[in-house]
Image 1 (cartoon, one colour):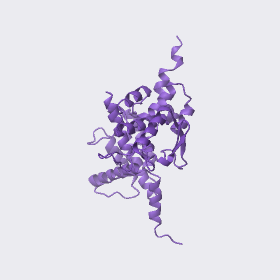
Image 2 (cartoon, helix red, strand yellow):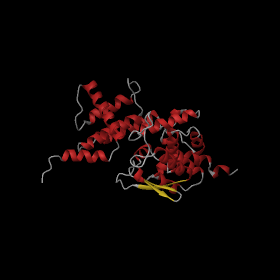
Image 3 (spheres, rainbow, N blue to C red):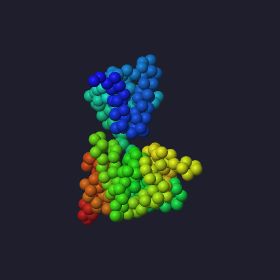
Image 4 (tube, rainbow, N blue to C red):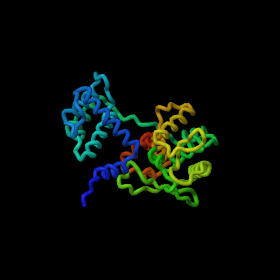
Amino acid sequence: MENKHWQDDFDRWIEQGTSSSTRRAYAHDVKYIATWLDTHFNEALTYPLSIERILQFCLFHIDAQSPKPLKLSTLRRYLVSLSVSHAEHGLTSPSNHPKVKLLLRRARLAKNETPVKKAAITLDILERLLKTCDDSLMGVRDKAILLVGFASGGRRRSELSQLQMQDLKLTEDGYLITIRKSKTDKTLAGHTVPLKGQAAIALKEWIIKSGIREGTVFRGLKPNRTFYSSLSGHSINVMVKARVKRIGLNEKDFGAHSLRAGFLTEATRQGINLTEAMYLSGHKSIVVAQGYCRASEVTNNKASQLT
């Protein structure tokens, strides 16, 4: 039987596997590329975009003399968004062409750019942040977000934003939390992690004080003490930065991802097996997980104490 609405069905299923914030970011990047094409070539963005145009786009933005040079990390983000857009049209992206990859490798060597990572919120910093959280509804919520984000394995802000009441199971010593959507879990199999101690107490206090019984766990607050339907990942990032600023640190160095970096850094510092830490964090790659632990490993390296 012919389904005349198959394209709508396809689009709906694709959207279900991608967070709304990610979809907005993709759309923003593709719109920028389309505007660039219109400005410089008086052309509309058509699919597939030619290799020639994508190379010109890259060269324009990596040239130091360009009126609008970009960091390579930003340029790569645009190319990823373009790849996603091509995939949705059933096409192979020019972003993956060998010439494009070669150009980016040469540019990275020439510019000597290294990724700028957010500073880690380790346990000592976390304890200072918690002291800025009072007994108000917002203070109790932020305390719970900080502790759950750190103690449950260094959760991504999207995972905290999407956490639902049905994902929480009360246990004798805390909670079991099911992470249903994750950046690296493309099969949506889900991942269950424990939450214990101070973090479990803080979460329970938020649930009781907020009166939330179903739906999204963490929500934005309205002036009249009622709730928005959810709390965006962006808002969580802003909250973390605001709390960091209160304790006298540079908020530009920190963000929501600092909780993830801090969990793995602290786990390494305390001698916890990396495999155990990765189970909670959900990292699939040891290389990626080790990237968070190097500073701690260098400081605590026993080989440095031979003399």
